[in-house]
Image (cartoon, rainbow, N blue to C red; front, side, top):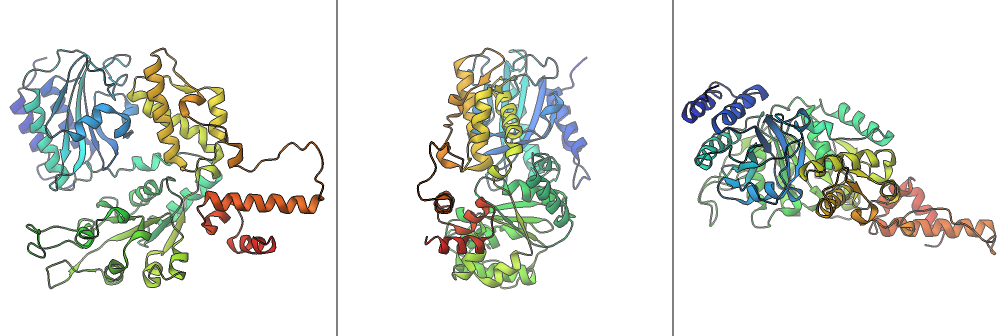
Length: 495
């Protein structure tokens, strides 16, 4: 079959977006298909996201299981190189860095990629918003014009993302599939999401660091009436003090030294959609009053502009702190707390989801292993025991990172399949001291049963408080008792 010329394909791709305010997956698929046809690639993938996670938003020529796959940039050296590059890259056929799509090519599922090129996609603010990758089994698949061709299509995809096309944004319903697990705690969480998502109530997502609060926010947004609108993320703890107000509320040119252009803040960008304020408890006090006005009245005061703007934004706040305690201590505005906590959703810690741990480990093994060519990676029986028994203070994020590092070690050690991940690869010691357990007693306690039980209670409370960094509310959740009961018990035990 004769290939169409590159110019014809590029023009056809541009026309795909004519009259489309929100092109669906079919339109994106056609554009990627035109890019594949124009360049001679076996597979083309569009990955979108922010920070260190990218999700497959569209693909052609890859196995179906690649659809919706979430990849950590740090675990995939080629993706990391693309994100950091200022122009398209072509990887040499003998480049030692593993390709994320080894074993995913539809033309031959067992084949490794021998020709790879890609480009970072950047928004108008020059920040990375994704990558596009081209892969082929033949080392000679790409011609000498591949860099220019890829740059042209990348510019088109960047324009589409800047237009806030829902089909290209990293906020599809695939995110709900990543709420993995069937434990009672996860079933309860899903019921909470289904209950609150269709409403317009502000939501406060509470949970320890690493439990997946952002995924819960994505699931709420995807199941809401605002799913076609933007989902804008802001980490309140990462806002520079000098730019925090501008980042949230925006500014006009000349509003302050260095404001050389107009800037749409997070609230304006989220108009008609959802704004996720992560680490909400870290919001500095001077901004809390201004945020309260937006939440109460829907009026946005842009720096350097006299008149306020009306915005329609649903706020989802997330925090690993007990904000009710911060309110009681005077560190957080009570009126803002009541406004944001319209509906509270608690994400369970991983140790509360014992039934899900091996399922999650297997999921992360498939993800990390696929990027390294370890398509049959599995945990050894000893590693499975360690994974289940480890207390996971860093929760799901720690599990994901440990599995990714373990896969790197296994890939470096041996290419033999099936690859087996052992306890030493996970760097997990079976930390008996970190979890309550029954010791084998050689003899009965000398001080009697009642005193021995009190000693054990005291030790368990001390351990829970230590693991919670002195947060008694968190310690109560770890011990699965009411916080007031924990305080009463501690007083009775003279703690």
